[in-house]
Image (tube, rainbow, N blue to C red; front, side):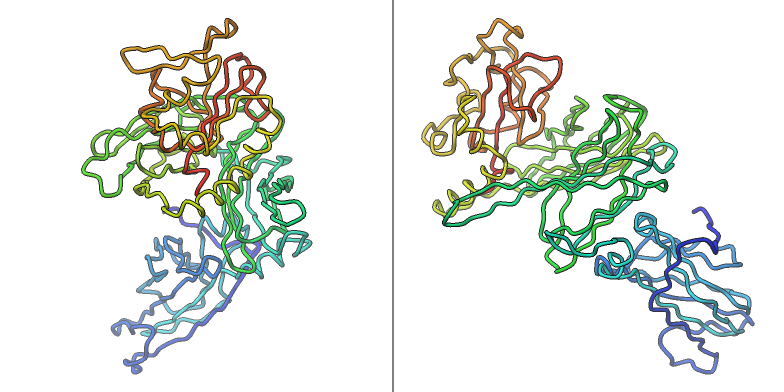
Length: 469
């Protein structure tokens, strides 16, 4: 662990400090445990994460004037023995505090011989942090906020003048307008220290976070805010403005994907979105990806019969990233009325119903797909005018009858580009019964599904994992 020195120039926050000494004769006082007589003292304490309502584990503890390597345990506890009598300050360092742009440091206190001193420190609450970070605490949508820093993935230097945006969709239901899909976007720019603050957000929100500068942009990183009246999410984003369009690099990613209640964990598809890098897990659920671009990316994980996962990952050549993912078994709901209502709302939310009304593509909704009883995804697509199925050794491949583009097709799966590892593998990773809606564009697709440099037919598959019923 790197030993860090307490600097007086830090933005210091000392919260809920309790420091008291226990002499040797007070053996029954708790906390803390009194050390054996040695002429030296002990400093013990607990660090609480008030923001997330838990203990702050794996935090670095620094005692001014003492060289020690101490981290808090899973319960936020730490103990430092053999402390010479004197006056000290305790500092706490943690990635969460770095993202918030704050530090926890006690006031100076005295440690006597053969005594124990107990310290209790807490990360400030969401309301307190928002009051300090946001010029306007409440906005048109609520009082919650997302704050953090944008750093270069290799040097960790702050990235200034980057645009940070949060996008989300609200569904309004009324007798006058029926179901109305209302997209929202809020934007901030990073300052010279790479910090951003997006305030006045609603709670109970599913959204995406993205950083742009020039032609470079991160993936759309999924985020969520909880149910409390005031929520605060702290997120550091790794981003390099010079890496526009880069799909390879020196970063590495490995991990495991476990399948709930399954005897084997092999055959799960793992894709780093936007890079074209796709691998499958082995029988133990292990996978490795190398030569990856650095930065904040999104991992998409799929296995037939299991709920798909979208996992944000922060990649850098400085160290290999490890992830552990568990996919729960997919269990469909049984109430058909409730399923239909929820799917209608969900299809409004992703824009399917709105695009369907425009009539510029070919659309297949749940009401039609449920009557087809197909075995494979390609069985659904073979009825689309202008598409045909070619039988190959690896399975059925969807081709276009159009001469432009050499008959190629490009897939989007739940709003994300899907790159086939081998032609025809779409049937291996998505079952026909998981698909609830389909969009096919023989001409120019909507702007959000347009890829530069390609004239392929665009097929968008919406599954139960995105369009939940």
